[in-house]
Amino acid sequence: MLYLQSQKEVSDSLSQVGYLPSTEIATAVFLATKLSKPILVEGPAGTGKTELAKALSKAFSLELIRLQCYEGLDESRALYEWDYRKQLLALQAHADREVQSIFSSEFLLERPLLAALRGGAEKILLIDEVDRLEVETEALLLEVLAEFQVTVPELGTVVATSKPIVVLTSNGMRELSEALKRRALYLYLDYPSQARELDIVRTAIPGIEETLAERLVSIVARLRSMDLKKSPSIAETLDWGRSLLALSVESLDDEILASTLPILLKNRADIERALKELLPRVS
Ligand SMILES: Nc1ncnc2c1ncn2[C@@H]1O[C@H](COP(=O)(O)OP(=O)(O)OP(=O)(O)O)[C@@H](O)[C@H]1O
Ligand SMILES: [Mg+2]
Image (cartoon, rainbow, N blue to C red; front, side, top):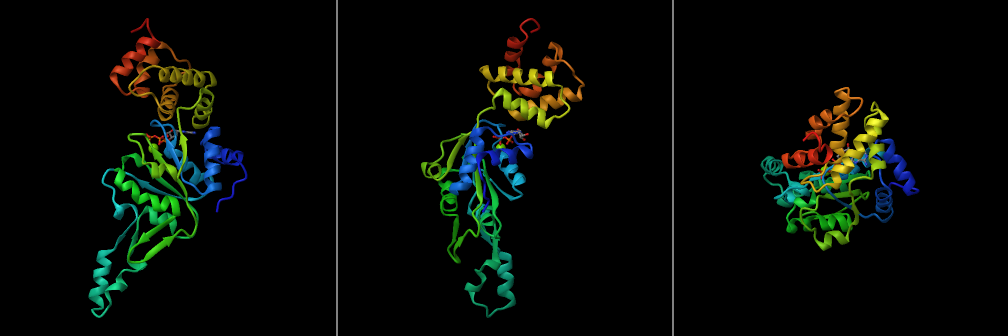
């Protein structure tokens, strides 16, 4: 079991792999390991929800197992499936074989939830975009999240040899069930503060000029304060920074701002609105 001393240790370890956490993030991770509880991370697109799980895996050298959720995901994709082909071959090869014998772990195909529990070593289990599951399918997750075990009717209960650190993410497309929320620690990931986003930019784009980085982050903050259909995310801030670097831009004038705005805003009405507010003289 991963043993962490403090939130600071979490924060330092994540920073070392390029993920700069807020105090809330570091606290949630620390508590998740102490209490052996999943973290449910909710928030707008591009705020670092998925990346948190990836960064944890890197920071603590733990294997990352990912379950990407989608409508229609079922038990056979999430938990396990019987390897029918192998079962059939086994029966054909030994006609006198008892049917029960082909329902043993040798014939089981592990899917992410089961794989995260088996195999001894502690892992990071990322259950990504859980709000895409139908409410009824959410129930599939509950046993794993609460008890760290999976029941396979033919085999019995598979209990985790080592409890994984579980990160669930959601864009808030729908309310998650109370049963799921009750089992997890809740972390709301909003857009970062300007100071933290500046740190993220400096870390991810080492070649960027300080004044340009500051300007970039402050324009992004201003865009987020406007009533747009889709605010720019951290990923878009970084794309913008890298683009400006590729264009060898040293200072951001109105023309460059106008021509590169579509890197940040991917909606015509948003672009027009932002141009009006940022560059009232030009537009
Ligand atoms: N705290 C952070 N430190 C460093 N980089 C970050 C941080 N948060 C986000 N990023 C950057 O933002 C990008 C987008 O983050 P991520 O893919 O995790 O978003 P998300 O919240 O999962 O979005 P979606 O809801 O669209 O899946 C990451 O690839 C990373 O480059
Ligand atoms: Mg994501």
